[in-house]
Figure 1 (cartoon, rainbow, N blue to C red):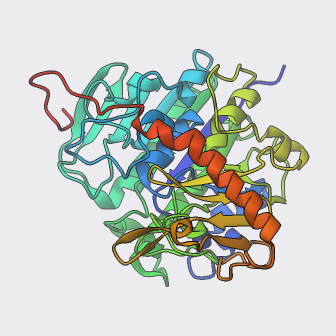
Figure 2 (tube, rainbow, N blue to C red):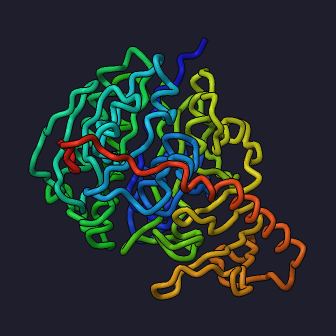
Length: 426
């Protein structure tokens, strides 16, 4: 019987779809990731499950839209006491006890007990930050089991990428004799942008390009190290982003950016998989997929049971190994706790957008938008009048998704800490 694959998920922070050469980028140099795509499978229509950080990460780890876990609204702030419910089955929980697991990098799913440290959710090791590195107070933490401690009280921003990759390589090396799962949750290229002075490449994309090109070089080093220690063919490496780009970066041909309501630029992200000898090489698939799909896909690939909970993600293994069609009939795009859009293979139906300071329900004044993404991937021209039957069918999909999910927004009251608890990580 073949060994279950080791898994390393590299999760960039605010990286745009158009920032990688393999996805059409022309300014930032990403030779290692482009080669990784040539040697594996690249998805062209892969979506984050939210357009901002916290709900997207909750979706990735649980296979369920964040509205189910009470984390759909905005992102967790340093003063907040909410977090991912301990009842949620995460990827490391689903892979236990067969897999050793580590979270290296950014957590951002709760930094006050009982949501802290991340080892409460099945990870054996944590090395990283409690939330985004533009938030304060900020320190680096480490946890093995239930014990958590500050490893660095003053964070050295320019070396974070290098440090997180080094921790990933160390964990892989230490667990080479058993299957392991690592979520390498980078802080780059989220602001503040602090290029590593020891690793400058004179990127034509400025500081943003510098930090992305450093990610690329570290990906190359990681793949080289896996080869050196004999784990290359045993290790599935995935690369994606938590949402679209923020103030800098490219969303490619897609409309808007991080936080941008129902538009693709906030959700459409890179997704590359590579495992020589197991994952077919040179496959580019337009199959609809989402970061919700990681949990069911990885449990199937590991030969383990899928958790007995209602998942929104689907198993992508047939897409990956057989170039099969998507298991998704639709992808629901949320803006906070509202259904903002529905995507099917050909069509996109948008019902919410922003105008100045207003969160606008387009349907409320009779202006829902239908886009033919085969002809108009930038979502520039609505074709509601040309395809009234399609528009009605997509409207029905939105109504069905809204009725299913939006009432769940009130199902999880905020966590109230016990008397004396501090609202910051300790």
